[in-house]
Image (cartoon, rainbow, N blue to C red; front, side):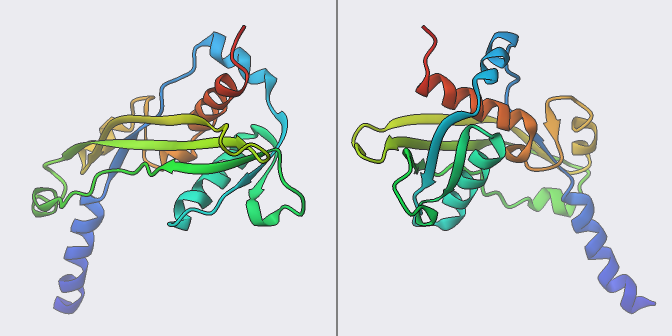
Length: 185
């Protein structure tokens, strides 16, 4: 029995301390939401590999999930050049923290930290790579670790899961891409 409690106690502490809450992207206004009816755009997009493949893979998946273009795939999947080439311009990621107090308190004392989420990438016509446009689909907000995250997650602007996988993020990504490629006249 002591053997089980020896391993169970640290596991429970880690589970309790790892409760997390992350902020969702801002909601689109009703006017911004109306613009989403213009999607999908009739373009093909090839995603250029990045030196850290996790970022170009994330960009590829996010563009596919958002349904912004008629086709999105890794650049190597295209037999003829796509209409646009998407390139990761800046890596966006959370903060590296060592939650000593959080673990020591078994998650009772929360850790709140500001984190960045989203994507910053460029789109360039295949034939004119220098004519690229930057699309900033990133945002910042507080993330909470510990028991307090359970209460924070009850608020509509927070999630337990990855906010970049949320419908709100897909809508924000679609809108921010749309306004760069087709500005309102």
